[in-house]
Length: 438
Image (tube, rainbow, N blue to C red):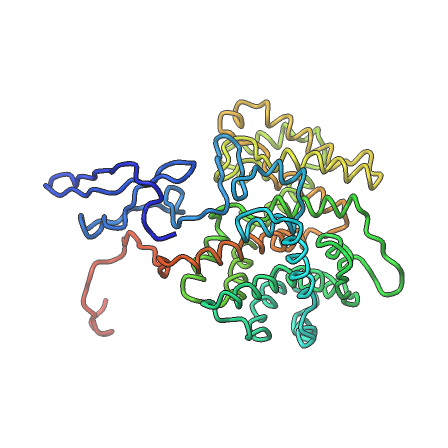
C-alpha cells in the first residue's frame, strides 16, 4: 500500500454553494465493493471537513484482509468465502491466511503451528499478576489488564519497526491470549491454573485449560473442540469494526502491540459489540417461554419502550449474517452431542427467529439473525459462563487485530489517527473575575 488510490476511476467535484470554490476529489476503487472519494484535500481546497458520526460512510484505511458485502450477506477472508473456510479449514490455518495473505502449504503450516505452540506458556511471574485482581473481577477486566501488562514481560519484541519483533509479538499474542483467558476463568472459580499442552490443537488446548483439573483425567470431546474451533474461525476478523478501529488508532501512535491489543479488548467489552451474545441469553431468559414472544415483539416495536431484539440486525449486514447460518447448524450438533434433546432456550430461540423473520416490521427493516444469536447458546451448552463469552470472542479476534495492526504498521503512508469534529460549543469569549460574574 502506498497511500494513493488503489485504482483511479475518475473524480468527484464538490462545489461550495454561494462561492466559486470547487474541489476535485480523486475517486478510487478497490478490487470489489463501493468506490471511495479521497477527501484528504477537501479542507485545503474548500476549508470544510466532512461530518460522519460513527464513520459509517468513511473509509479510514486501505486494507487487503477482510471484505464484507452487507447487502448480499457476504464475508471474505483474503478473498475466501467464510462458508468455505468454516467447512474445510481450521482456526490456525485461518490465522496464517489473515496474517500472510495466502493459505499455507504443508511445510508452512507445520512451521506456523510450531511457532504458535512454542509460545503458549506465560512468563511465570505473570501467574502472580492474577492475584492482584479481586476474585469476583470480570474475566474481561483480567484479560485486558494481563494483555496490557505483557509489554512489561516481553520487552524483547517491542520494536514495531523490526519485522522479526512484529512476527514474535504476533506469535506470542495468538498463543498466549487463550492461556490468559483460561486462567482468568480458573481464577474466578477458585480452581488451580492448568498449563497448556502443546500436543493438543488450538481449540482443544483452550477447552483443556478451561475445564481440566489436576485431580482427574480430562479428555477433550472432538465435537465440542470442532465447534469451538468453528466459533473462533467465524469471529477471527470482521473488517473495520469498533475494536479493530481502536487497535489501528492506538497503533497509529506507535504504541507497542500488546498495548494496542489491550485497547481492542477494552473496546470489544461493550454490550453493543463483543457482549452481544451474552445479551441474547439475557433476553431469552427474560422472555421465558415461547407463549410470551408476541408480547415481547410488541414491546420491541413500541418506540416508547426500551426493549430491544438482541441478536438481530447488524451495523453492516442488511441480509442474513452468513456466520449465523453456520452457527445455527453447529448449535444443533453440539446439543445432540451433549444429549440435550429438548433445550427450552434453543426452542425459544428458534421460535423467536421464525416469528421475527415472518413479521413485516423486522423484514422491512432487514433485521435478520446475526452470529451472536446462536453462539451464546452453544457456549452455554459447552459449559462456559456468560462472563466468558466476550473473552472467547477476544481470543478469536486477537488474530484479526494482530493482522490489521501488522498491515497498518507496514503501510508507508500510515499517519497518526486524528479525527476532526463539528464544534458546537461557545465561541471565543473573555474570562471574567469571580466577583464580576452574576
